[in-house]
Amino acid sequence: MSETLYIDGAWRSAASGQTREIRCPADDSLVGVVAEGGAEDTEAAIAAARRAFDTGPWRRTPDAERGDLLLQVAEAIDIRRDEFVDAETLDTGKRPYESDIDMTDIANCFRYFGKLAAQDAGRVVDAGSADVDSRVVYEPVGVCGLITPWNYPLLQAAWKVAPALAAGNTFVLKPAELTPHTAILLMSVLDDLGVPAGVANLVLGAGATAGAPLSAHPDVDLVSFTGGLATGRIIAREAAATVKKVALELGGKNPNVVFADACDTRERLAATVDNALNAAFLHSGQVCSAGARLVIEESAHDRFVDELVRRAESIRLGLPFAQGTETGPLISSAHRDKVHAYVEQARAEGAVIRTGGEFATGDEGSGTLDNGWFYRPTVIDKATRAMACVHDEGFGPTVTVETFTTEDEAVAIANDTDYGLSGAVWSSDAARARRIAGRLRHGTVWINDFGPYLPQAEWGGFGHSGVGRELGPSGLNEYRETKHVYENLRPDVTGWFAARGEQL
Ligand code: NAD
Image (tube, rainbow, N blue to C red; front, side):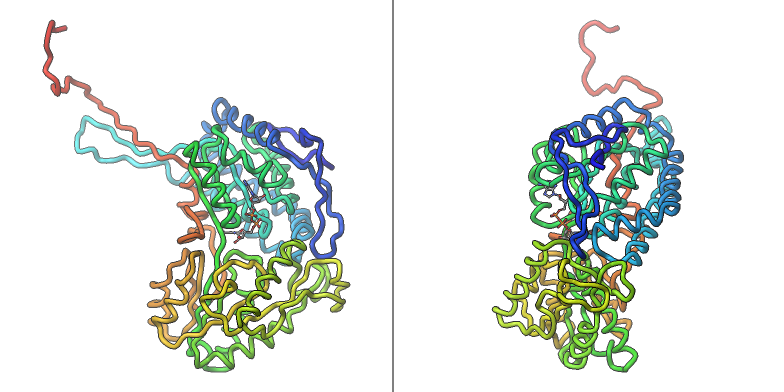
């Protein structure tokens, strides 16, 4: 099937006729063949979205009706759950169990924005005069270019598509070239639900060709991007010429700050280590908010890191559909090489690789790992702030370990990053935990937890982690223009300039 571009309400092949093979990163098996779009396809999609926005019914559809449609999308994803789960699993190599959790979150995201759509119609402003009616109203921004990564393919798309539709925009979605299948399914859901032609468009292909017009094109009013910092910079630069709205959700290098009093009993040690393990190795560390920097109080270092290493060594890597698999491969061979290069550099800079630091091969009971891009969970001890492994986002199953002795030092280490996406503090002293949380310069801070997010709470980064927020009311506002309508109910001569010459 190569008619996988969805443009102006119809499925199409790429104008060039080119296709791309999608392979499962766990075993390199062929998952599907999709259209490899290029700039020409994206320009056609932008033109369709422009037409649909300027002359179509969508932006004038009542908010509540658009909200209802989003609720139906959630329903359809639930009904077609197995199809969505299988597609996400095969494209990413993550377990169906994890894909299923993603689908629940995705359906909930559509539900959240579906309900929010009609809740905030603007406000009346007191202009200080009975002769003035002054209102602040919200309108859709227009044509939105939505560009998403491969780690949580449909989840990241849903965080953009749901609020964009709720606000009355039209959009062109360009998912990561490696993981297109759930985006195709989402478009088929929107098509089935009768979304007007041109409102929802999908282009597939490489970023530099199929993606680039979404930031540069004058007919796109907003570009919302989730992905790496280097790409985010290109997009911001390209968007500057047309001064479009830009939302960026970029990477993170997220500190997990652990005080000794969070591991001073057997139970507390078990819980804190277990959460640090999840923070670092969930989805093999391919998570923008991964707890890839363990910042631990010196006095707890030895017992904590020994236990972390023991637990990391027992993580079962495997094929996604096999029983017993706990985590899967990295997304590609090139990405695994990049992760390994960071580890090698850390070793060269004097860090101690306590476990991992190598490709995972052989058969651990779920079938051979030799054909996929598996990497051993890796603990990098004796890391320092000068090392690249501490500053740069490796985006793999690696966690660096740094130590502190005072609260001030813990905060200084945790905030010593150009990023600022998320972080956590672990302490059994509630006042201290809140004190530290208040000082962390990160968009999301967890206390005695790591990872949860809620559709009703804003998500986004300080610093180089991005611009703008997704989810929550701000996540809807990203897709709305705010307009002040000031109505003078009794227009009269202002008298500002003297009336000279012949009077009327
Ligand atoms: P990436 O930047 O390589 O690619 C992301 C998307 O951008 C892809 O669709 C790609 O095709 C497209 N793209 C690449 N070059 C482009 C260009 N010149 N113009 C337009 N589009 C272009 O990122 P990735 O490797 O797919 O994803 C991993 C990154 O995403 C990590 O840095 C991770 O931290 C980040 N991420 C952030 C969040 C968040 O919420 N902040 C969530 C998930 C992932």
